[in-house]
Length: 237
Length: 265
Image 1 (cartoon, rainbow over the protein chains, first blue to last red):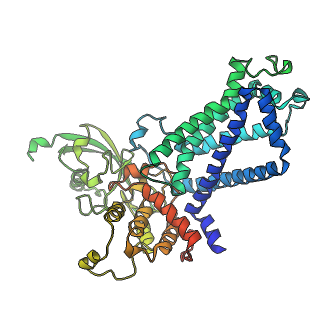
Image 2 (image 1 turned 45 degrees about the horizontal axis):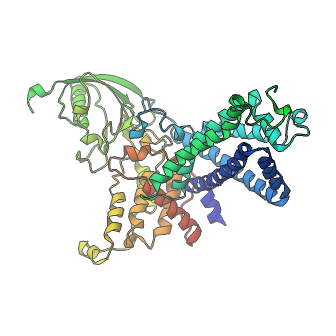
Image 3 (image 1 turned 90 degrees about the horizontal axis):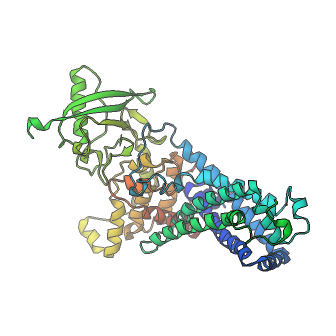
C-alpha cells in the first residue's frame, strides 16, 4: 500500500483529496440549503422534512460519519498544504503585482487569495451552528417543547446569531465560489467547452450559498412574519 | 538610433546580494540616457557600464539568447515576472513600456527552490532535476524523417506543442503565491503524454517528476492562475489539469511506483 501513502503524501494527491472532499461538501450544501428553504414553504413542510430525516437513524448516522470524515480531511489538508505553501517562499517580494486581467478590480477574484480565512470563518460558523441546532447548547429553555421550524426560527433571529450566520454564510459563499471551480481543475476536469461554464456556475453557486443561508436571519429581521411560526418565536427574542 | 533618442531617465531599485549566503539589500540607481527602443536587459547593460565606470561591481543578471526563446533571463519588475507585458520575456520587454522618470523595482525570483546566487541571478537547477526525473524519452526516436514516419494526429501535435513551448524560465514559480512549479512540471508532463514516443513511460514519468518537484520544496497549486498570466510562452493551466489526471491515473491504474523519495532534502 506504499503507493497509496505516497499518493496521499504528494502535493498533487493531497490536493486531490481536498478537491474530492470539497465537492462532496458542496453537494451537502445543496442538500442542506434545499431542506432549509422549506422554511419558506411553511412550518409543516419543514417539520415533516425534519421528521423524515430523523426517522432514518441509520442513514443519518452514515451521512454524519461521511460528513465528519470529509470535513476532517478537508481541514487537515488545508492546514498541511497551506503551511507548506507559505514556507515554500521564505523571502518574500518587496512589490507584488498581478498579471491577470481580471484582477484589475481588487475584489473581483480575491476568493482564491482568501481561502484560508473564509474557510476558518466558515468553520467557526459551522461549530456554532452544530452547537445551536444539534446540541441546542444554551438554548434548552427557549427551545423546550418547540417544533423544528419554531426552533430554527428562534435561533436564526437571535441577535448574535444573525451576525455569525450572515458573516459565516457570506464567507462560505466566497469560499465555494473559488472552491467549486478549483476542485474541478484539481481532479483534472478542464475542457475548453465546459471550463468557462464551470467557473460561472462556481460563482453563481457562491452567491446562492451566501444569499441562501444568510437569508433566514435577514428575513427574520426585516420580514418577521415570514418565519413567525408561534407566539414564543416572536420579536420579543 | 540617433543620440537624441536616449532621452529617458529611470530610478532603479535593484536587489544586490554578493553571494547565496549574504543578506542582500535594495540599492537605488539613477540611469540616464535610456532609449525607449532598448530592451530591459540593454538598459541593465547601460547601468552596468555606468557602475563599471564608477569602479563599482556591476549587477549580475542571467541572459543568453536575448530573443525570447532560451528562458535564461527573468526578473521581477515592479512585482511582475518579466515585467508588465503579456507573453514577453525580460529581454523582449522594451523601455518604451516605462515612463520617463519612473521608479522601477527589480528583484530576483523568490522561492526556496530558487536560491539567489548573486544579485538577480537565481539557481534554477531544481528544474533540471525535475527534468532529470523523467522529462525525456528513454528510447531512441531516430532522426527527423523517423519522426515523420510516426502518425500523430494534427490536434495532438498542436496540443503537445502548446506544452512544449515552455522555456523553463521559472516565471510561473516566481509569480505563484505558493512558489509552485506545477505549470512548469505539467508542461513537461503534458508535452510527452500526448505523443506516442512518450507513451511507454507515461505513468512512471508523472510519478517521478511530481515526486522530484515535491522534494525540491516547491509549494502546491491552489489554482490562482497567476502562473498562466506570467508565462512568457503562454502555457495554459489546462496542462496542470492534465498532470492531475495523469498523476491520479498513474497512481491508481498503473503498476508504476515513484522511484524518487518524496521527502525534501
